[in-house]
Length: 424
Image (cartoon, rainbow, N blue to C red; front, side):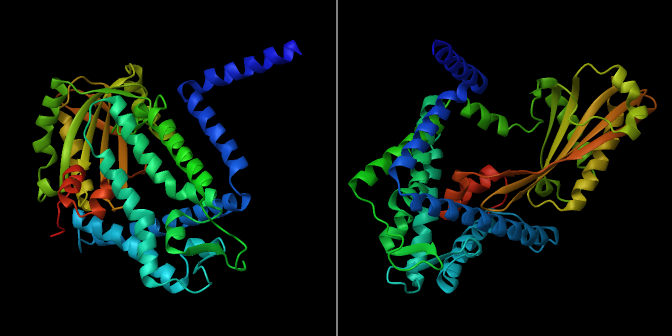
């Protein structure tokens, strides 16, 4: 018996050591999950799961459609990314939800999951009811949470409090589906139901009494506190904003800033309207492995640089403006490669990163392309060979940006996203 207890404690301690700073947050979430299982109706949990899957399907479907349409418009120059364009995209999503709920009693995600929106007596939802439902479900909580997170602070504790409040607010609506027995707070307020298509009246009763309200508020606050004060969350958020490669350290000194200033006129040579197409150019001293190892076909060309490689190299990162067409990227890359003839200190590896960003309202897409070059030859006859290349896609979102777009605060969105307010 004693050995079993010691073994159990040893396993828990090993688990805590492996998870590190996330251990206590994991314990709290586990306690919350157990409390939900023994407090809320099983029907409410099942409906919550189906509705979450339906929302994910809608988000993916609307997101892919938005990317296709917006990318085509941007590439053909019929319009360009701007704060007004992003606001139109965000509100088009909301009105699309409204129209689908009103005319078809559900979005494509709900239809796939076998769900239907209807009134308490089984009638079709009204247009005003659908408008109010989507405003209360998406616009109001996201706007309030976004403006909470917009409060500027340099204190980590204050940032944790902001995230606690924002996450607690955002979790109220989805958690209310489980605690009420299947319906969200907006649904209960507007006397609407999201239920399986073949369900009969009264099969999924939903209500929030005082006890359920208490558990709902406590569960939302618990989620908020767990997220806001969990050690390491701030570090993860800051790491996600790093422009370089995961697991690498970068440093930009005055010397690197001088190199960037020298390169800038060479990079923009021949580029039409560089102020509208290019955002900034940075040079970093990067420590760590290369972002991409030279491929088998380029090993011979990279042997000279590999022999002298000491896990440090320069990274030149160029950020294209949200409205920059594809041809600009090719022109700029050619300028960057030709400008490398003026680099000294050969042989050496150098990484060029050309990053393109598209602001699509509900989210942003950034497509960085990394090119590893081996600089050989001499100052009199330099040789620059691309020995490896890779590309990736990063999808980013911001509650702050959504709040600004929902409420028409285009100036702040334009400043943060570095895009014009109007598309003309």
